[in-house]
Length: 116
Image 1 (cartoon, one colour):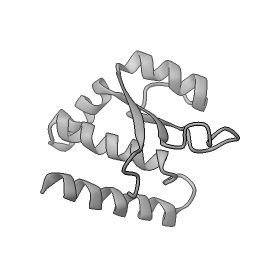
Image 2 (cartoon, rainbow, N blue to C red):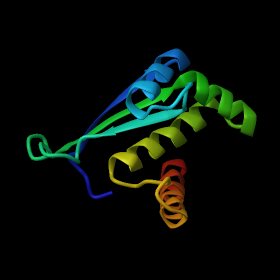
Image 3 (cartoon, helix red, strand yellow):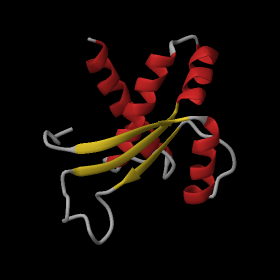
């Protein structure tokens, strides 16, 4: 991803914790699987340009989703972490179908690299 010196924070939370943050920052009700807070946007990005941002993952949701699709919680967690990092790098699946396709393609590419 051409970010060899990049930094990010990963916060592992439960469903009640992520639900509060989901409501507070995204105005969405209930828990979600991952939330990303990019630090490379806005007026102060030059202060710490190597800081990508924060990725929050609900371990309870990752476990539940993994069970539902027949994969381990660890595999689902990795998928969510890659998804969150892509959001930090500017990918957004909610803007258009084409953007969603590009994000999914990049996610699949990265997960394939991780699994080899």
